[in-house]
Length: 420
Image (cartoon, rainbow, N blue to C red; front, side, top):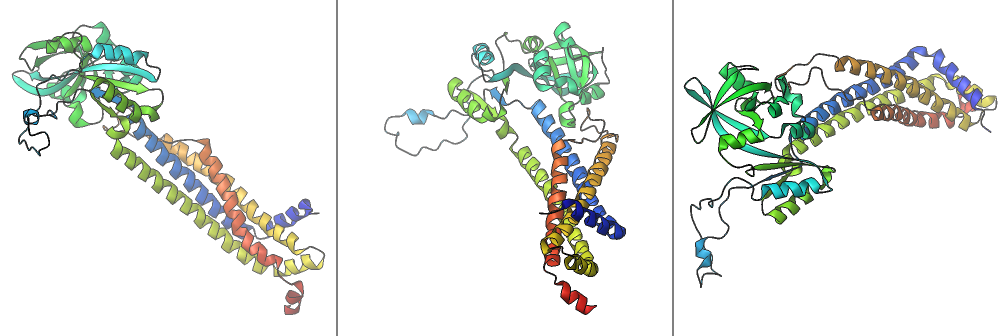
């Protein structure tokens, strides 16, 4: 029967007798684990921030009526040419409106659907902001502001004013920061907007928003859906876009294909709209975990080298232990327990150091126009990272100590005594 109390006491004595070497081995683990915690917490926090920005502003399914050339041309209707290869050059788009046909019934259907978390309509209006006599290109998005805030967190990008005033003030506008700067206007001021038909509408600025993309903030603004319909001169059933949030984002591709076939309109799911972004996130995560695991493996090799040296220095102790009745297995457990104790001490110190530095990073100011709502560096304090770090420290030190311990187990005490 193994007397763990005695074995652990001997392990502790060995570690304390070579406190400098034991400390260096533990610091190797501490460095590896703390670096792992810092790197993985910061990188995953950054990925979550970027993913959140995309998910906040991107609908799971986007419905619109794409203006495209007719698939069937008049030549296809001629008798005798059905089985021929017909080439038509310079095909023009078919005559149709940008609005979604039967938009209101589609909205009602989607709002009742059990898979839909929320749905919001939009009307995009092309026009001009008037800076005196100079027209500046602009795009007005007619929205239902309450739904946009609930589903897409639009209020997180409002840097001045109250976006909800779009519902309570007639002819209000939530203007982009770039457009506001060009027009030299602020909250409470009025801006003149000229529609594509040439009519001029005075709008009161209720807020300024900043998306972080200058080319968008220079032209894009938001008004209520009713105001956009008045500027465009259309009825209340004129809607150009419908954005959906689903209860389960994984259903987006299949749901988009179903809606496109059911209503005969274009439906784009979030995976298709953000394919390049998903690739970038995967690559960043892959690099993060590869570097982190490499650091932990390097720390394990350091422990292996130190324990190897300890065994050579402890040859006399091993001979005495075996001569006094300790078996080779007992000696192996003594050195393996030393490795695990080093891993446990170094791992706990690494978790503490990594957490403290991560907290420091989390409180470090970070301001950029690209991310107006972010004030500090993003850090992800996921408890799973700490469990992985401690577990890897114990596993790495266990295997790092296994081979030297096996060598100690096979040492013949007679050979050591003869050599003395």
